[in-house]
Image (tube, rainbow, N blue to C red):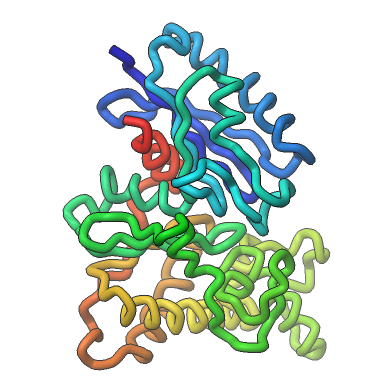
Length: 316
């Protein structure tokens, strides 16, 4: 009987992967950069080189039931990544077929945010919930919607792209999609950086610790560090980001009435700086029948762990 599965989380910046045993424990894991590879075949080769020594340590591929992959715009029906805006590989990429041929193992694919939602449902703070939404605040904004204990995938496999919903019509341009005013353009780590650049440019007279950073050094982490030191502009950036996110979450709540919304991703390291304005603006934009019912939580799982576990669960 096969003892292990592989869980792979392809993110816009980094790909994380791990070997998962039948108890749902990650026994080994590592990562590689995603967008250093112009063609997907080179990416898979790099992944293979990293993974095979890990696989050999537990007895080789004969001990594996298969590979589960979470990826942006991953189609659970076709096993393809389709027109992912945050990846260099454009068009339709038959990732599951390419992985199967390279590793000689059955491979299943889903959307990366859906994989994280499955991981949260199986091993995290939503274990006993049948209605919740996960939102990943990383390079982009991913989401997984669970209704009646099932991931919502839609007729074509692409339901639940909440990060690309328009929250500011005619607003900020998304650099990859060209859409104006999407949630991802504001509430991602990239969006926080864009807000910082905009505010520093619009208010040249206002002093800020953020002005000590070069344009390349200006990251969401830098904004957080300055906010923690009491910087006015940095704190305003998180207030504004929380407003946008909270207004969006209000829309999502009134759509599916979840028991909880679980936030993942690097931006959640901002803690209360982000959570407090998000909760305040979410509640302020809900009809009374929805107010004070929805838990707003940070995931108890490491983001990478949730995605790896959720992807690996596809194959069992």
